[in-house]
Image 1 (cartoon, rainbow, N blue to C red):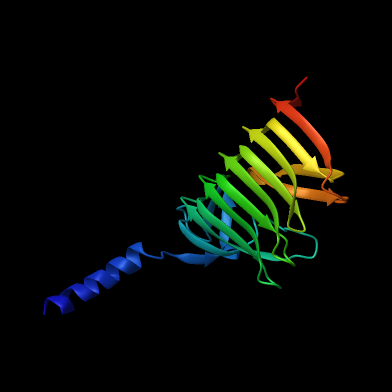
Image 2: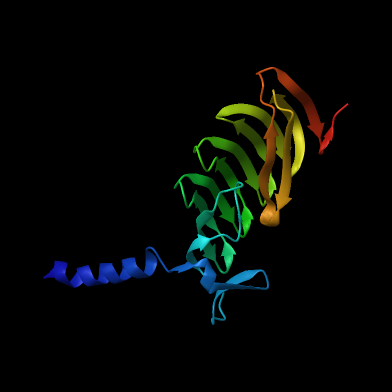
Length: 196
C-alpha cells in the first residue's frame, strides 16, 4: 500500500523538478537583454533547442543547431552545438549568467577534430587557449581578463586571428600555412601587449 501512494508523488515531483520545459529558439523573443517565450511576460527558464542565436555559424558550409539552457531569460549552463549534416559536435561550452564561463571546445564540423580549447571567465578569455589544425596543436596563448598575458607560442602557423563576437565568444577566423613543427612565434605578453 505504501508503494502505490508514493509512486504518483515521486512521478509528479520528477516532472516538476526534473527535465523542465523545453522550447525551440524560434518561439523566444528578446527584450531588454532577456529571452521570453512568445506572449509571456516572465523571462524564460528551461531548455532551448534549435538555438542558432549565440553561435550563428561555426564554419563556412556548416549549419549548426544548438541546445542550451536559460535561467531567468539568460544563457546559463551547457551550450552544445552540432552540425546538422554530419552530427559532429562543433561547440561545447558553458555559460553563466549570459556569458561564457569555463571551458569552450570547438571542433571541425566535417572531421570532428578539435580546433580550439579555450578558458573563459565572465565572458572574457581567461587562461590557456590552444589552437589545433588537423588535430595538431599549432598555437598556445595565455589570456587574463580578455587580454593576452603570458606566453604565446605557435608552430608553423602564418596566421591565427581571433575576433570577439556578441556575448564574449571567440572565433578562430583563419589558420594558414601549417608546414612544419618549427616554432614561428614565441612572445611574452603583458596586459595585451608584447613585453620588452
